[in-house]
Amino acid sequence: MAFSLDEIIETISAVGVETFDIRTITLGISLHTCPDEDVNLCAAKIYEKIMRTAVNLVPTARAIEKKYGIPIVNKRISVTPIAQVGGACKGDTLVPLCKALDRAAEELGVDFIGGFTANIQKGFTRGDQLLVNSIPDALCSTKRVCASVNVASSQAGINMDGVYRMSEIVKESAERTRDRDGIACAKLVIFANQVEDNPFMAGAAHGAGEAEAIIHVGVSGPGVVRAALASSGPLPFGELSELIKKTAFKITRVGELVGREASKMMGIPFGVIDLSLAPTPAAGDSVADILEAMGLERCGCHGTTAALALLNDAVKKGGVMACTYAGGLSGAFIPVTEDASMCRAVSEGVLNIHKLEAMTSVCSVGLDMVAIPGDTTVDVLAGIIADEMAIGVINHKTTACRLIPVPGKKAGEEVDFGGLLGKGPIMDVLRASPAVFVRRGGRIPPPIHSMKN
Image 1 (cartoon, rainbow, N blue to C red):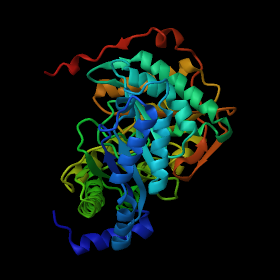
Image 2 (image 1 turned 180 degrees about the horizontal axis):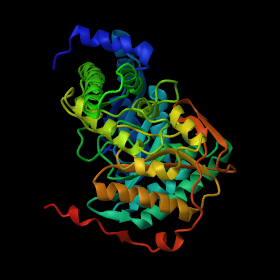
Image 3 (image 1 turned 90 degrees about the vertical axis):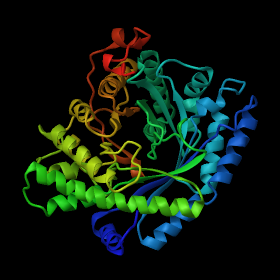
């Protein structure tokens, strides 16, 4: 695939005025050679494998930034789900493996490392139990490690024992970081239909079908799309979709260029482009701004789900034509605290958690970076998670929850996590209890359309 000089110049011109960037280069690394009965030896093997494989990741990204003038905001690593690697370890904790991940990430200079992960949609292995039980200690004792747990799939249904246990883990992780507003939960995602090639945190993991090592790129660019819409006038829906498709095509072409360049420089295969529009707290870098540029008075008003559906579909259609392999999550992210205009809509009472849940049926992920009152019970947390998992299972799409019950704070108060995690208001939740339902135990069966063989 050839890239013209005009394409590159056009995109570089968007960097300064439209906050365009490459959100991440993520290097996936297989750790299947690392299991050991001794948890400390296993940790040493993990550390050595990551250091050896990823030694050139950050220098490569910086060289590409300098060559093309395009910011690469995050340099990241994803690894084989640690529950699969740590299942052979004796003892009752996998925290040493998490600390090995964190030490490698710090020494390599990467921003985050994902893969402290378990897949429990049909039940728990010993490694899964060890990992899930280790999450609060692991996230409280590290800075760069992200954890994820897949509790549901369209083929398996929803593991409600897993949902309830993860609700307890979310609550404990928040309390353990009470002095930092429960920030450990910002590094923990609960999934339905987790994909194997996601370059975005906190849900990245190097799946079973991936190569020994591979490079994925996550693009961004909501500011570029917003700017295109702002200068377009009141277009009919078909033309509006075409404009977003063309803009997404241009953004994705640059992601393909960056991925291929990184692959050549590192001698590691290039995997996928994740086409997702991912906002940041920076002014003008908002998905909510795009929805409002379509004609909504505020994100969250009636019509928001339809506008988001149009945006998500057009981004995928335009982006997939610009790259060889699309993957990951691909679409539009709607993390609340990471999007300043989403936060404004919440503060003004236009966007609530019920409308947000409806929006997740058509976006890339789900209830993402949602701060809720610290006194939210485990039962209510389990109900929120179960609802989101059901949306994913029934619709054969990835959905997720990154919920932060902020200790000691109530709905309407503010929380500030800093950096890309952003700040914003705490959203209220319903108090009526789903306890009898969520405590039934077992697995909600998969839908009939899971039977495709």
